[in-house]
Image (cartoon, rainbow, N blue to C red):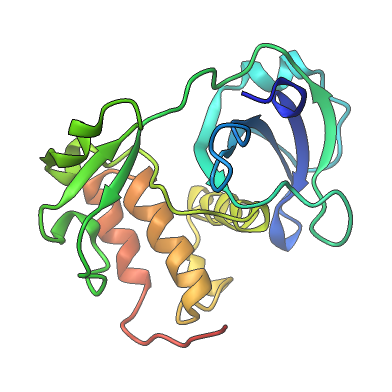
Length: 211
């Protein structure tokens, strides 16, 4: 684990002026070069910039993650993540468990209805890759899908929209494959089956490839 780049707490902007979130970076890129940077988002969201201590932020608990990201959060520009603290009390000290889908059935929006080929992987036991499980036992475990820090901010914005009882499709065009995929990853992981079924009604079948 790269201790020099772990425990960094960032403040980042949500979209649509919905406030500011806080996230911790824990870095295993010295072991897993491709996908070793992990981001966890805290529950605390401020409407405006507030001078928060690391302890205040950490005490709010974890809202989202860990998710692997493919590059460090951007330090400048429109979507910059500002490092505000660094702690040695890392949220993640060992490589976590993730879920993976082994198959090519990507058409079903409800992941619980995909063929039962979901498995866990933690890189510590190769036999775990061979054990398929019912989706409900894995629902709240993150996937191995690589994110960008900017995508994490979009997912947290989507969570905020849902929390406020609004429709994500009123803010994002869920036909666009990028936003659509982030919405599907979010809803199928962070909400129970009944809630997810309702939220998935907000997304149609039309897909527009925006990249």
